[in-house]
Length: 479
Image 1 (tube, rainbow, N blue to C red):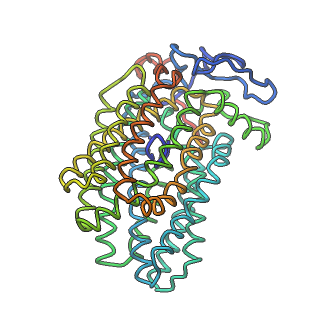
Image 2 (image 1 turned 45 degrees about the vertical axis):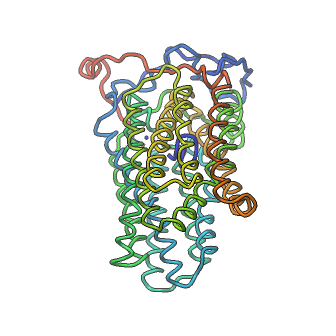
Image 3 (image 1 turned 90 degrees about the horizontal axis):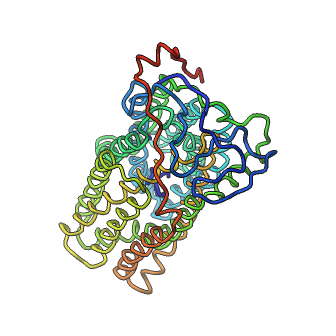
């Protein structure tokens, strides 16, 4: 899942037919029975069943590291670096030009709203066209939007509606880009969990460096310099994706001849048919409403007011360091029931709001943030890997889009309610409730059999690249 979705968000050559493909009407990965409309459903289906290895979508892949995965890895790290710089640029730039906190929130919402509203449609588009071309196009659009924003700040002609319009275009481009990320990782690495762990570590490191770099640029240049740097990250990301050579998509992985609305309906049907999938999303809405939504603004307010901005920066750094540790753990640990292990790790997130709400010192809050970051990061890798390995390639982009949209649905409500709740109950008590609700959410995940008992799916063993290269000459997707 993407960002504040369950996955955090925020991951060879040749192909063979799906020898273990299950036909329409077969059991879903969660073990439930479902009937698929043979007219509306994609054909052939590539769903998997519990306890069986996932069919190889591509062959001859390195476990994780290869030239192409390295390019994708760098593209994701650069994009994350730029995204973490953006809030600093908006806040510093708008405040410098006389705008207040409300304008900053509006500018951020102008980007977030189109993303959340359009990402489902982006999933359908990604399943119909070349994901690589779509991601390159989205990066180029965002390169232009951020360059325009840089120009406005450099010249001093900053008008709020123009910044919001630029943000809206940026968010819409992100909605086209994001769904393709989920389906790209399994096509580049045989070890999907290892690949997700590596990407999570890179994104966490970028999250640590981004705000600090943005602060330096604002200090020595201006907010326009941050926007220019953000534009450059999209240019470099697009270059990496341009050099990327994706193996061919597995046969039947993209629907042909169906209507856009039909593809949207099929994606929803596939999403609804997997109890473990929609079950996590429903529970995650509670997480966003009662935990993540209030925690982000209230932690910032409480820490800055009591201990100063430097303490808040230290706690954020500890949180980022914890996510790196969680990514490293996800590289080494291979639980058979991934969502069960991830749910147990997620209990650790309660330490973050609880230590702040309890009024503990900066060292204790930093330790709580580090533990929380590790737990959240480990859960994120388990979740992303489960989605990428349990869902058929022909609907993966749409499933991921529904995942992201559902995960983000309650975030603005949680953030909007944080202030009124703090006024009535006190910010400390709201954060303590958020810590307690983390325990409720994690327990709920473990109480759903389809979630806690979902078995991991690994690709079957592959022949060494040299042997397979003789039998199946390398072919790459020209798209």
